[in-house]
Length: 586
Ligand code: GDP
Image (cartoon, rainbow, N blue to C red; front, side, top):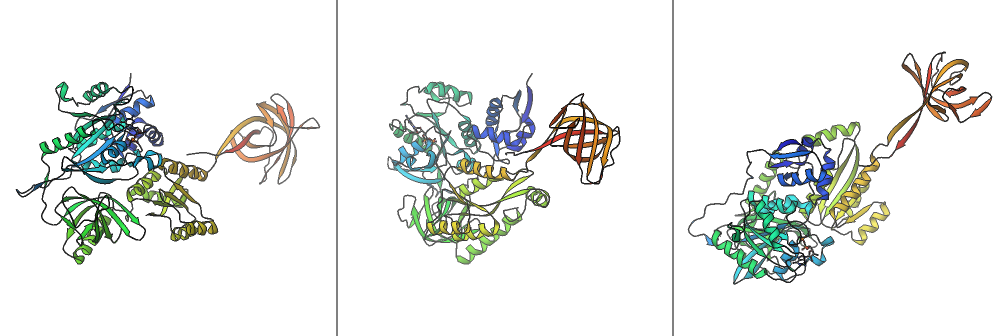
């Protein structure tokens, strides 16, 4: 009978591993195979856990703990009568390869998918389109499984989630994950059954699977909005946009347009010659060029304000995705921004945030596990120093989080420096003094930097697919593992005569009572069941003849070398064994 294990609706990878009595790395590996890249401390939902348990073929039945912990949904402020209607903010979610990017492209009329490494959307952005004279804002949420954390944030930013399901495939772990995120964040869902142009497309099967998730389609008496589309032929795309506007009308999304703007940072990176650049979504109020904005622990006087397709803007109202230049440092994905009166207020608020963050255990304070790692460092943990550079803050966080998951009791990755943007001279200097390898994710190393690296013999490794980067670090980390020593027992001799004893050598004779004796070999000298020395067998003789091996039942002469004098006695046992070192991998 299968064992039943109760788990929470959302469970961290480490807790699940513990409950299943599995090594956490095995669980992470299985999640990875199923397209969910989660680190030890990340939470996965019940359905994903269930799928993984099935895939692992464990004789375990998962059951949901009854009480459901509600995910905090960002509070929507009450609006005054003056609040105006605003465009809906829409995110496209779903399983990898079901066509999220293609659908976003079909809507935008652009062809971004083709330029991406491995067809993967690497970072979150946003754009606005006009349909029937009305604006709709799309969050270009990352489709890649490595960015589950960002997707989770994505749902919080969103009014409507489009759950993309390929008509020729079906509901997959990430589809379920997306449905769960959307439900918990209180976001309206529209299911887009995509790829209906394909042979083998079976929208009815998808509807059936949806009903199993308590999502009953309208034609079957439910209220789940479903649109059949093809991102390829664009069939149904207009209908999808109509449905978005219809849902928006029913929900009546509103915001204040007056007053200082507030909103969220959805992406940030450094641009050559322009400094930190942030993509942000205005939620309330009107953002203006020249405004002072605080975001997280940094602030800006808005030098330029642009739409996400690069048009300069003087102002931007609710639900507008914008590009802001002028930040002093990079804000982080998910930071709320707020407009304040002047530079002094901006600076002091940013400083206050920094102090608060440190107090809450931000990046400057140490977590328990980091502390343990440092304590261990003095004992046995072997560390691999690395420098990480990534194109945007979101990817950088994902890379670093995934690297942390590689740590074991013996080896650990130490990120000595990390940043957004191309690899710099300074990275080479840091790498040189720290003995670090530089990893770049979706960034380049300019030629002069490469030259400097070659001169200083610094290893730069550039990747555009996250799991390839992680695999490479893992392989390097494996080299740090102490090789495993494997001892193999050979045979045993009982000592019948001692011919010669010096400080470093003994020659004796006896009978092989077990196995076979070989040379060269190591041996334990045993007396009354206790080990009195470990020695090195240097020679075996059968009669006057030197031999390589002697079998059980035979008499032989045995010479051994010893570091410290051994007074061998008749009746002692000499147990021969060989020792091999075997390299290990993580
Ligand atoms: P994502 O990982 O969800 O962003 O998926 P992509 O947009 O990268 O699409 C995955 C694959 O499905 C690509 O090869 C697309 O060309 C293909 N695809 C996407 N939408 C359609 C569609 O409507 N019809 C067909 N035939 N192929 C599609």
